[in-house]
Figure 1 (cartoon, rainbow, N blue to C red):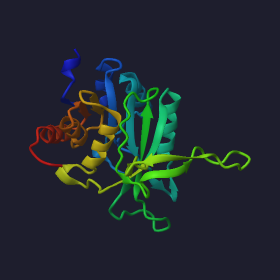
Figure 2 (figure 1 turned 135 degrees about the vertical axis):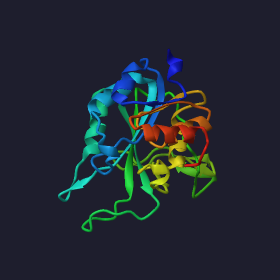
Figure 3 (figure 1 turned 90 degrees about the vertical axis):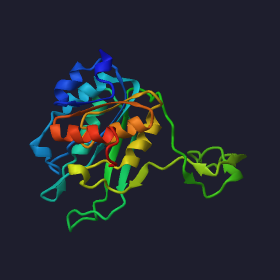
Length: 256
């Protein structure tokens, strides 16, 4: 039964498709849902709480959901939808493993009364402790080699900790703000995921052979990158046009 879903782009409403998936099937979800009214997607809306519950059901223990969102500004106030969604994920049983930022390399826009809007949230939820953690280490340390460092920070009374000599690697783990160019509106889709963003999450929270899900597959970036990195995939989208684009992307007909 499971094989009918694996390595497939499924055209349909994820509210109908997800309940048909076996329980605890998915290792990692990487997705960016339609948020607020910033993208219309032909008028498609979704029941967030129902979807969140289904994602919890299909996620394996130790599995991860990467939820990429931002907020609309209405009458001078950001909606806060992203925060309410994050709190709901936690209420139904997910841990908020990390609150990450996707910083957009290009200049962005927004209200003239605010600073330029240049990021989206990347909430990393886990069902228990993540079973796979492959932290990317490409941040060059200021110092490397044998260094003297404190064992811990200052104690509550201000006492300094003992110091030890320790080998510092040339590269350390990344900070949780990642910068990429925006995907733009290429391939007839209004919001294409940066391919590198998806790759970095896939290699961080999954391993070869794991199943990666995108219930809003759009132009197919998540499934394409999963395939390129030896993962299995499941993509779902309600738009026949987007499903066709995603299938072409996975088959390698064009680069995103």
